[in-house]
Length: 480
Image (cartoon, rainbow, N blue to C red; front, side, top):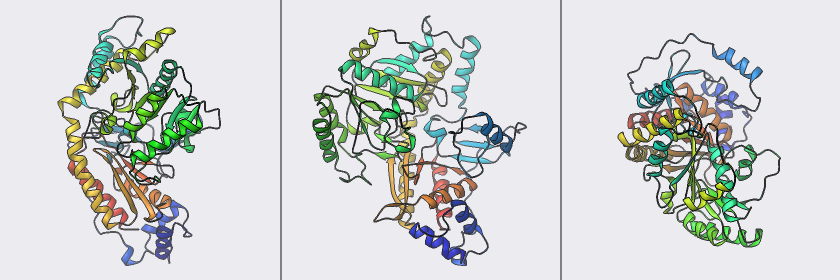
């Protein structure tokens, strides 16, 4: 009976096993029919030469209690019993018991070079011993060395760098620049996009799960050019035409700017339809606006094919924002723009206390050097192609996989209960999420309905890791 209940829940999404926890318990229970049993042997994680330090600190249960007592209730955690992660090394994490996990989410797409990469640790430690903080009211070599190295990675005339502490701050500053430079207030953003959680960037964000009911400002959300779920499929020109019509009919005809992620992160690893940005950038500039590329998650070679996500659309933005992978875990973000646009900020005092501090600048410069030295862009292209091929083969085996998408190590796997209707497999995703964790695999979740596995590991992730990930997914899905 339990097996039949689970089959109905998995195939229709309407079975009586409405709780993911109940579904998981029934899945592994002895009541399951033999034909629904899991394969005999779970996959084995690739070997790794690292012995974690024995942990003698506070246990997970106590941490959770204190977290509930002293931290804000809006904070969420993964898994029914959250993990207490105490150590990391390259693409692996370790819990308080010393169990090793394959990190396929990289601290929410933040760990680019690998956990505790020795070159970055050394750079941060050496600078910390000399000077931790001054601010830009004094001169220091680290910030200009980092800015010069970062500007060398940018196309066109994108040569002026502002350092901040996060992607949210970067997008706030970019929006301010766009409005000042254009003289217009209206901003255009995409549905399903995510650009931060501050009072200003909440307006840009196009997912209701992240938006509080406060004034959103002059923000226009246009149709998302989603090749899988969008009404125009992969027709970038059709989506771009909708932007033009929205500006003509839904605004004064003049806009301050347009912002988009080329690969939507929180929205579920959606790569924008081909050719979309080139047409939209032309439309926005004709309407007086500037074009902003949010590279917080897709930058620094993660997509494999290009160093920046926007290059996959053959465009050069007016402003580029970045964070996360830029610091490999350090609180670091940046805005890069042209000298002309940057000049508008000199109308008043623009200052950031911690932006570009010596420690973060030293760490950020080390990140750029590691990515070059270890040829991580080419590595992402190679490993990513192998992983996508294996995931697409898995899609042929399991009906629950509706879409495999992305490039390099910026991938998404969308789960559905019906491939024709594309019904989000919310309960099944939650069940598989727990099972993968038990197998030692940590993935992210995304999309409005939380039914997309986000696969965005540290960029040192190997083909053996990719094979283990897919084998673990196969093992877990074979029980549905």
